Image (cartoon, rainbow, N blue to C red; front, side, top):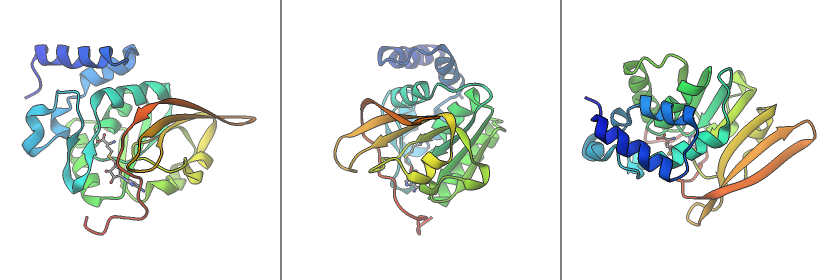
Length: 214
Ligand code: SAH
C-alpha cells in the first residue's frame, strides 16, 4: 500500500520548499515510494522529510537531501551512474529513474541483499547493488558519467575521481565525521578538476573495508 494522494502532495511540497525544483527529479521522487525502503518501527514516518534509522546502524537520508544531491548531479538519460553507500537503496532507486544504468556499492552485505529485494519488487532492472568497499569505486564498470557518494569522506577518494569520465560530475559530502560536512560538487574537465561547495550536510562516515558483522 503506497501513500495517499494527500500524503504524496505534502511530500512533494516539502521537497519544493527546500529547493528541489528540477521537474525530472521531482517526478522520479513521486514515482518511487519511500515506504518499502523504510522497514519496521519507522515505516509510518516514511513520508516525513527526515532521515530515519535502517539496519546495520545506518540511516536512510532525508528526502530533501536526496533530492538536492540528485539535482546537483545533473543526470542525463544516457548516463552510467555509481552510488557509494547503498544503505536502504532509496537514493539508487531514484537514480535508476533518471539514468540508463546505476551501480550502487555498500560495505554491509545485509543492506545490499535487502536493497536488491526491494529493487526486484519494484521492477527496477537497471540498478545493480554490489557488496564492497566503495571508496575504491567499481573498476570493472568504470568509467562513470556521474558518481554520488552518500557517506562523508575526509577528501574526495582518489579512485573515484579516477573513475569519473571527462565531462563527468561527482557529488560527495566532505568533512570530519562528527563535524559539519560540506556537500561538494566536482566536475572533471580536460584541464582538471573544478570544485564547488553546495551546502552543509551531515552523513555517516565513509569507512574502510567490508563490514564484519554483515
Ligand atoms: N544512500 C543511502 C543512505 C546511505 S547511509 C540511502 O538512500 O538509503 C551511508 C551508507 O554508506 C551506509 O549504508 C554505509 O554502510 C555505507 N558505507 C560507508 N562506508 C562505505 C564504503 N567504504 N563503501 C561502501 N559503503 C560504505
